Image (cartoon, rainbow, N blue to C red; front, top):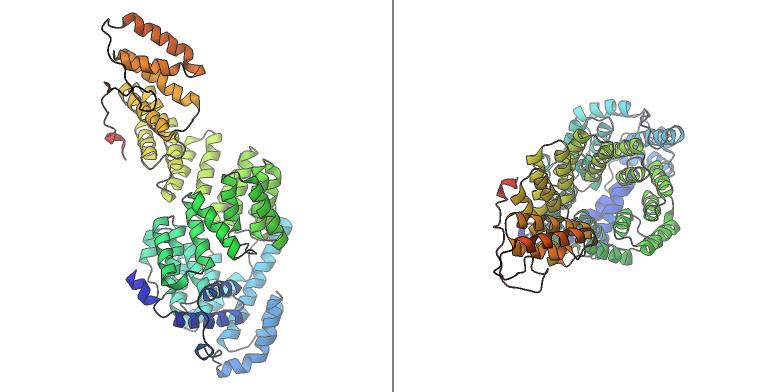
Length: 573
């Protein structure tokens, strides 16, 4: 923290740097980087007039290209990219060269997107490519070899390489771009999308600049290292960025990722108060409202975003979530398709569309949607998990195992992934692995309270009665200590088994208590009565004290003989 504070010691200097980079990115049409830097600058105190940075430095070449650049930029802003590129041919300055190459790149992207929308259905892969990429790569490569690319041109070269799937080269070029121009957020963000794990992140040689802390925090969130991400963002807030809506939104997303729904909802509500016309991240907010089944709030959010801009990806995703919550799955899928027409690289929309196709029992479409999501971002655990579920429906456990493993690697402490893995191992008769998964799921905090039950049933199936009994005991203790009213079938299953188990082991007091408890449940009542009759037939004449086996199960708190706790350490992976 001390090191971070010293880096952020001079907030005036940081504000000056942000103002300068806003101007540089504006001139080059890099609107997303402009927005990011502007939001950060807005969170810092205004500078006095005498502290404002001077206007951009002009070279001789800049002066020479000034008119052509002004004209081309006006066409560029109107999305007339070919026209902008035409008037920039032959310009010498770095600024004009970047805009010339960037216009050609965006022209190719626009044509590709138009062709995709015209010719393909929502799930078709197609062979539509940006035809400009290869030419751009050849030209930029020559300049790169000659060392003639500035930070912005290096960024564009990296984007071209990534689009051509030359990922290793793209990473190297983006790292070079961050060194050449550390304050350009676009380069950091592109780099973030290519880093697959923490080892790769540690191996990169990144510039020592304050912006690196924002990158690391973002990266930790992406890699599901939420504790580290939250610490990083907290230290950024303490360093002087307490008013930043960007940081607030990132923290909200981090809480969403660890399913701390209350914290995330509170932050998103605060964010909407501070920035009521914000559309960014509202799809994530809608996911939270969906999970909580907050229909009126989700409806209000959807209507509100439609009023602001109905042709935004996030708006379409929010409306899709709204229809999904109302179980109108065809309509929901239609809106996720709309989102993907607006941005085919929208990760959330692919995953959510996969979920809708699952609901509609269209497994082949669901598989395609999830695969697209993984192509966009290999770190999307929801898509891997969705693929596992789809293959489970298709009764293909080997495939399930592969995809659930991938999801588990991305979310090692998510009990749902572990339970799913355990079920796959069980279907493949790999019982030792299945037991490890179920026990680990219980150890990391079982969200759905199913792991122990599944473990107990597996022990029961394998005739490991002591282990099964121990799991059922812990399960019942957990349920009653939480005061949760879970499905009667599950509690009664455990009580039925334990009653028989104690009876076989001649622990009649305990067996009697379980049998009495069985009588509280319709589906176990007859068995409970039958067991009580059996006990009364064989019971010793001497009356032993009845006891409470499960704490909250009975009002009698006399100590009791119980099955000795079994060693489950062998199941801990």
